[in-house]
Length: 455
Image 1 (cartoon, rainbow, N blue to C red):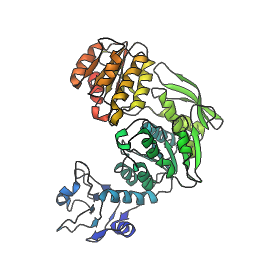
Image 2 (tube, helix red, strand yellow):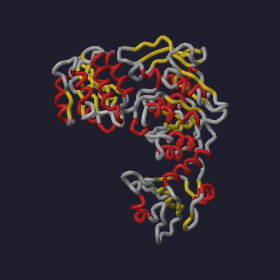
Image 3 (tube, helix red, strand yellow):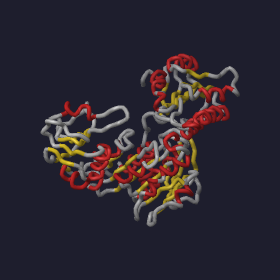
Image 4 (cartoon, one colour):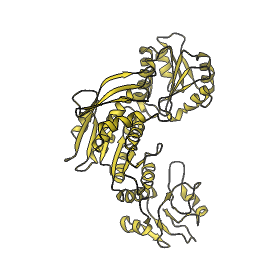
């Protein structure tokens, strides 16, 4: 934290009841397995856990607690509230209000973590940066990012995820970003939003939450760009990025090297500078444009943006390249999957030389569109000349069926990961590229580990 807070500050600002007086704290913890004697403990509830069940066990092991019920017999200071998750956000809000630097908020269906890491690489050259760690991008994770702000930090980069309506708006209400971007809208978490239009509306809250003087970085190539343009609050600047030369931030001379990493000239309001990415796939040019737009809105010169983009070496589970035991190239894109990111993965694989094998796990949370979406991925793999498609799970069987229509006797769907690995391994040699993709629930990183001996 930038400066300590107290339970009395929280109670006076947000209500609730103090029990056993107040206490000052400069750290917050929420995990009963990782208690910190110098921290405030917030007893959260979730779908499969309730920290209130363990309150007696933590008595005296932390400075104080935030809880929805009194710990009987305890002498610890307690802030009694109606909802501890809301209280966690309120503590985060006070931490945000202590911060005087630049705050950038990023959301989108896919690529937002890569954009976040690109921004961290750009700003990290000359600034002290606080950035979302890992995937701590929800109503629990964003407050934890705000707690981690330090007095020396100059820039805060917040990734915001959502699985339903109004979540982005809530996260913006506590993080209060001044520069925001929706990387893209794709069919992801459709079950929670009801439709792709619902996703666009929900993600667009990162724009409608901006105040006068803020900047909205808009991906002009996205299907919902016009929708967002028409809903910008008064006094908000719009900076558009995209592949067209008419946009403020755009690329020219895009090429891919032998490994599939793009290079291009980044043009920002007429000023150009060459960029060589160390990330695989042309889709990362899109990510780079959004990151460049956010950095430029914060006053970073084009040359410095280009240097930062070129310095990023990759994000775990996202288009990282390894060698299998037999010498095949293994592209690990196993972190997550939706139709947009799978399409990008297929395009990348299609551009490789030699034999091309796609390994696809189920794409989760697609709702009624799940079967059709998987079929479309199988059809795209066939059309783009992928040699073999191995799939894991009941949903991805639809992709196998569609792919096998053009490859008789090549329907390779598996219900067990070990069986897939056993069938796949003999297909790999030094002339083969295999790309592994799937939603988190599919645990496709275990396939990568098996093929590469955990390297």
